[in-house]
Image (cartoon, rainbow, N blue to C red; front, side, top):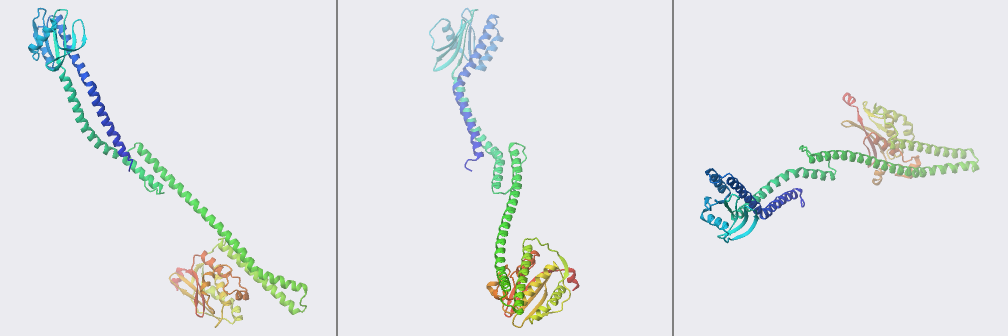
Length: 493
């Protein structure tokens, strides 16, 4: 990641550490010497106060006082020299020697001395910087009211050296501390940024509409509160998107259904108009002929009346079939599933249609079957079989045989209706289930077919979720449909 929070976090803290170190070095370089000098001045003035009190109590020559001064000289690297009123040296620190005695005598008797800078003056003392042997010193000398003279000196070189040592120490410690701190901050920042990166991954998955990933850490800090809120947001989004998709799917289905209904309505109107045009024209023509008395003989009038009645009957039958098909396609017709014997139903229908087959010199063949019980809507299945059988009668030619066969499969029974005659053209096989489709329009018109029967078969079988179909043979056509058998009945058979 180009702008990693972890990297930025580490660089910020390392920068702060280095900046703080550099600031400390700058402050140390500029003010440590002055601060150290002020500390030495305080020590010198403390020793000055001790000498002044001892002079006032006349105990500056005691052994105890000298031990105290020696301790101060050793601890703070100060040289002290004290001279009484008679210009006798009463005390010289072990680190002072003859040089310190000579300097005190020179100050008392105003000998010229190498003074660099006078820092502070008073009636009883002078604080100044001096140089000797290429070294600088901080000196405090003076004469008390009691006549005692004193000189205290500490080398300035120790101050500068201490400042240099402190600066070097800060550099070494700062570098080590910066490196150690950088390593520590790198790992600490990793621990801090890890949940942030996890939240980033979760948000990326949410962008892809994947709401499975959840934030799991439980440190109970601000990031975890953010993670819990993202989890809640994920659940809310998932629920909202689910509802939105459901509503969108329902809307698409409604739109598709509306479009389908519009298309079906247009198709219905076009087909009905086309199918009713011929019988209405015939009825109108023959009715006008009767009205105008074109033929006065009884036989002609009866013929005209028979044509009108026949065409009206065809129109009535077609309207009834269209209403049935319309109810099936729109799901308004309730399927009443029941257990019945399909063999008995077929035999009864074939017997009732025997007059029709005899009129057309058709021979119906069907073996004797034991009862076969199925689950289906008996009334609608009878309508399916009736359409198959009527279609077979109307197209039966050649040997004029209709063969009815029941084939038992694993859990289903297949009902087959075969008629001898001309096979259906291959290009028409996929269209025969469409409304008003007619393979041979002239022949269909001859026997009064409307082209709706097989559409009714398709709608009924689809509503029951069962298979159906048609097969061509050299000497005829076979239509079939399947139904679920009743298991108890199968075991009995």
